[in-house]
Amino acid sequence: MTELAAVKKNLGKRDMILFTVSAILLVDTLAATAAIGTSSIFWWLFLGVFFFVPFALVSAELGCTYPEQGGIYAWVRDAFGGRWGSRISWSYWVNVAIWMPAIFILFAGVAKQLFFPQMTVAHQIAIGIVLTWIAVAANVVTLNIGKWVPNIGAVFKILIFLSIIVGAGYYAADNGLANPISLASIKPDWGSSLQYLPAIIYGMLGFELISASSEEMRNPRRDVPLSILVSGILILVLYTLGTTAILAAIPAADIDLVEGLVDTLRLFFGGSAIGEAFVVLLGLAALYTFFSNGVTWAIGGNRAAAEAAEEGELPRAFALKSETRNTPVGAAVLMGVASTLILLLYGFLVNSNEDLFWSLFAFSGVIFLLPYIGMFLAFLKMRRIDGARPRPFAVPGGDTVAVILTGFCVTVLVICIVLFTYTPGEGIQWPVLIGSVITILLGEVAIVWAEKQNRAEISPAVC
Image (cartoon, rainbow, N blue to C red; front, side, top):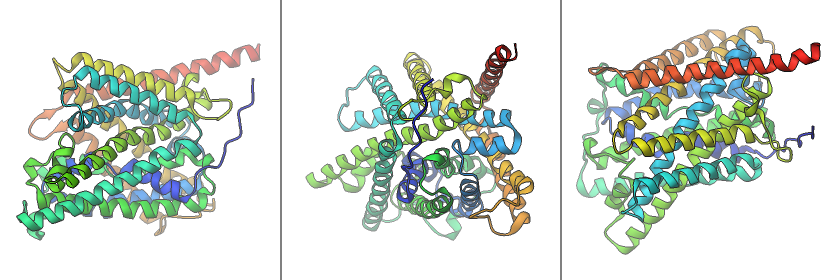
């Protein structure tokens, strides 16, 4: 068999900061949380201190102490064994395969608003499929090329957020506050407000993603903590200011930055030829960020899955790599196939049961959160069984603080999973629950299949 090419060290501090911003900072998350109302400001600040910061600290310690290709998969594998690592890797990979089609449908919807108002559903599906395979191509080139997709996306996201913040500020100054913003108004109702926790937490996850490409970093022990610190401050400030600015300008009930991004930008900047041109430019930038979102998460998910498959813990198809680039061809192509099938399914169902697709998107949220429970528990166990290992960066406060932070963050994640599957006042969301269970069971089938492949390889050698 041809020897794989050596891994090139293509990722520096700037790349890692922009990659992380691209992964976590999402325009649709800003919309979803602002629509909660002024209490969302409290939740950004509260969870920023008690979840986002601990999550960043834990990611920094694990990323620089265990700079292994595969990231979150490798951490859980080392702490709890290969099978649990495989479950984490499967959840990570399949969530991206389900989530990426929704992002590309969002791309097609905004493109329709900007340029093609008569675009049919079939054309939107076709656009989504084309983008899926462009994303696959971006995953199989080396990161010295592929890294520019998330890097440019991060810059565009920052510009869009800053434009929304400035535009909303001027609009509110001329028209008054659309929602009262005060200490009293941001105070949450601790009963009903809890149902919005998943939307906030969903927008805070992704610090660990860059560590899936540790072998391609120039100096992970030095750069991982610094990149997380810089990107974390930037992300939290933009999310909080962006949410506040939108609430100052638009009534909470009217906020719709997912489907109405262009309309919102026109509200702030339209009215002149220059303003309309600026709206189109921001709209084009938003289109690119939707694409870069898919590429960013696919890069992390595919590399984690490929690492698990190389260890024999997922089917061999996931382990196929380019002999010249050493990139995860198998995992990327399988993700492309899965994404395409979901888009086609959406095309068949959209006219009769559109809610089904969004149920698929919702249950992907459950699958998305599961690996992070494993990551926090792995952090705690590695502190216990491998405490003597030098840690270039460590969560301050010793083991007591580590236990407290882990307990709180795991509790928050479990609550979010429950709230994804159970809506207060409505009951159990059966499509979400059933979809989640089926996806987990498919992962178990994939793991058993991989184990059978391993036994089949070993048996001839023994004979």
